[in-house]
Length: 572
Ligand code: GLC
Image: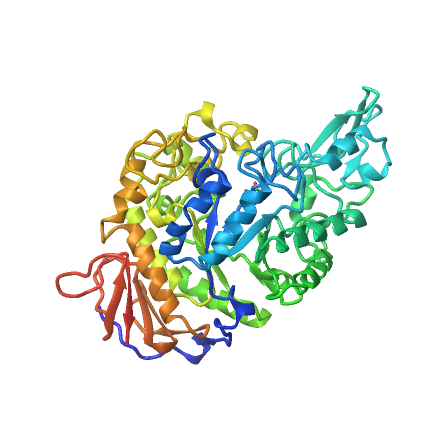
């Protein structure tokens, strides 16, 4: 099989302008590393990762070569949902540090040339938030209740939930409170866990308070915000609520009562004004699980500016799927003036080395057909015997080099640079994720990708901290530790380091042209300045185009060909 460098059809060519060197555009092609603070590094030994732990690992992040870090929530929280249940948006959880630690971390990141993005959770607070506590204590119809979505129950004594809606984490989406006088009371809406009451974004106080939060962190050196459940905030609930089944069939065209409503963009236009108060302007990236066509609304320059594109994360390791996704998304971002985002792993999904090592539903008759990211599936399989750990990692390394050569920004999740697999062997008694508790026997939850990182070969928590790790680490973490990989030139850690360094050197305009490969299992594209990326999704080795080999995810064959399930970067 051979590949030539003839250019693909004009329709495939996506050329965008964008100056990476201009400060305000730093995000357009950034490599952003997601830190899940509780599981990154624990400096104080309380088994939960902390901000001082992050600060101590900044040299590691600098060596890795990332442009920015995104911190999942570090705010005070009872951890009903790993910190996405926020008690106070303008403080640091005492379990993981202080505001002073935050300021030190932020300054040290700046010193190292690394930008800082923090998570904002505006769809819901936690039930421990002062507002919700006040709402519980206050009477029906009070201003305090109006910050949330309270309704009377149905039936003569209001004992029946206002509707049959289900929460995303399983179980009912309404919970009843006890009124201050001890009588059974109203119900509140929570699209996630019951500890996460949804806010009422029609309430002006809610709107003003979040702008205050954006300024609070922007004033403390934060460069941008990842917006949690960005498609959820505004709701328009009629007096007579539709059933869950009716809602499921309603069009998601901006008029749905709960999700992806057009009026949510009024909020983001206001936030944009806050972003523009700073120099360079603060940035936003929306976590919006919406149809691809509606993603540009979130990514527009008048709105948040960028939105996660989870299309590659949801795809199989397949040439045709990857090519279609890339062409389609580069077209979308060109239309909105944004840059595309690429992501394979985060704190909500099974790690991609593992996904690519499991049989697809089609290959496994026992696998539920609707399971892509496969957490439930993994539950019944464990990490063995069906996991092809080596093959999964080989494909993940190939996919990552493909991703890092694309125009746009790449969001990497802590531990993927170690080639970590999902930890399947967590005893039920140690599990923390509400999805596990709310859907017994159905979902094992997301703890398997949140196990604290292994930094060293040995030690009680493999170097995570002086104490134990808050989720049990398996023995095989030793082999995947930073220490074990540091000296091995072929390690996944060193592959990421080389790739990120080269990416910085090679990256220029946000343009990509597909090259003909004469084979439907091989993709090749060229970026400006002769940077060529070739990925072989098949099993038969492929001849590379002429050029200097810069890097490959697997060694070339003795004939100098690109083996199956591998990516190479060349300079032509
Ligand atoms: C987002 C977060 C997820 C969290 C949920 C509710 O999807 O990524 O971790 O559980 O929002 O806040």
